[in-house]
Length: 277
Image 1 (cartoon, rainbow, N blue to C red):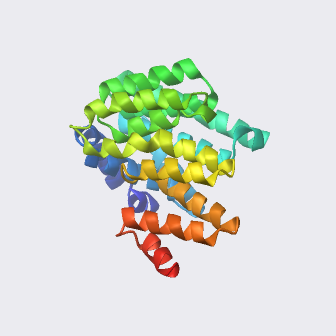
Image 2 (cartoon, rainbow, N blue to C red):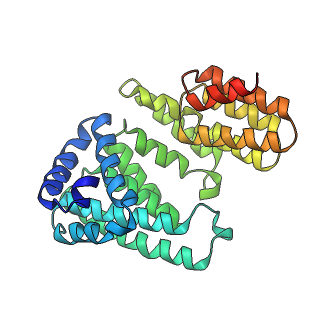
């Protein structure tokens, strides 16, 4: 998708988009391929190729797959404009941009669902959109619809659980309840097991922010035992850095070596472990 749109091969891009959309509910692999190619096109395409992307989205505004891509574009644009800071630390201008883009995204995903009510990914993204907007009842309804339609989707469960964190108005108890519900579907998608540590990882993040590194380490390594997840990697990197900055080189190396032992094939952790001697 990225290269086809970049090169203005809109006919081939349209065919590719329709093929990916039709296939995504069939398997976890197809879902990942669909989202990977769409995200690359709507998020990673350089600004100098914005006219090509705008042209493609304008040309293809009627089809279900095309409306999904447009909705995803507004979602990614809003989230990117907001940045990564907590709400109290985010500029009003950025929050307004987030809101305006997400309102557009929600309307387009709702349009997708009128023609394709089984689009669990449209429900998932609208759950995320409503979470950012603080519309709790609508958020829960969207996530619930998504997991009922596709209870084996790792992306859907990951989004549902993560947007139930305390910072989003949820709690670790709610997160754990969702994790327990999710585990009943692991036999159909083993990738779900890696999400069992999401509540533990978020607890670890809070401990890190409180400079309680011992409790953070305990919670985080319990999470890491379940498998790989972006949140776990982000938090273990944060913990390493904070412990090292505190002057505890021995503690930082202990964390690095423990992480390397869990993920021996990870090049970054292998090199860091070698530096520790």
